[in-house]
Length: 336
Image (cartoon, rainbow, N blue to C red; front, side, top):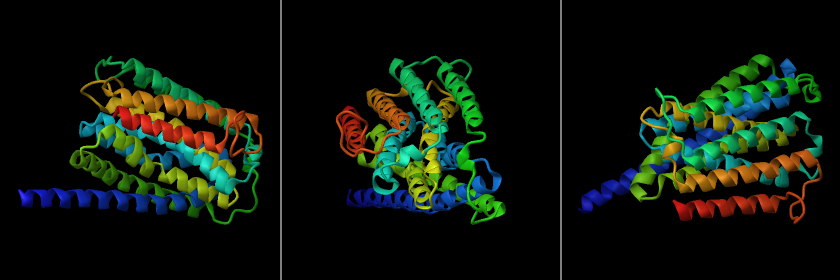
């Protein structure tokens, strides 16, 4: 009995160590991704909006992609859904904190018009996912669910609209780049690879932690896994602002939120036994609703383009966003 208890503690310790090690790799890789993204945007004149919303968001969302595919393959849809919805909640809260601590009060006034399209894209996609989670759609035809197809189509169409909106954006006009294009692509690919590899270990260790501690997989997904899988976005956001490209910081976070929902659809298509949306519980409904509310506040904040307010009862503020995130997290824990 004692030996069995020690084995369980040892396995849990290994799982936690693997979880924390994955987080460390993700942070280091994300710093490199931010610098690489700036080099690519500067040398190709694509602009920080497009690079941030697609290239950087794609690379920083690799943990969500790998984690979710791994989660559904080990028959843990709760972890997959909790990870995505928790990440979208947390990304909005992270952006509020980044802006408050590093961005300055007038950061939203420096953003391009395309940021409004991007924020709305993320909002609409998250709202769509919420609808499918709330109704618990269990339709599953030959391995394909209607919800997944609708989400992927909306993502592709809205990404095309965003690309057109970003063409000729003034943010593409930057000073002489610090690094070459070859350096940018090399570092970008290496950083993306490091993030991808660590994400597999992240999903497996999170599943073990949930199993051995008895904590709900959905709550583990919304809190622990979401925190680590959003570390790339958080790190890229901070690094981008510190090197003077807030456009890429905001685009990376909202672009990641939009891509996360597309990843949830891909995970649904990878869950061959049944519909992923139909397998989620009440805690996921709560997380999705809070993600929509938080993202809606973010859309208003970008649309208004007013100086950042840390405390306000009339306009979006840092305190309101963070408080809503914490409240949502508490309700998810109660429902899990």
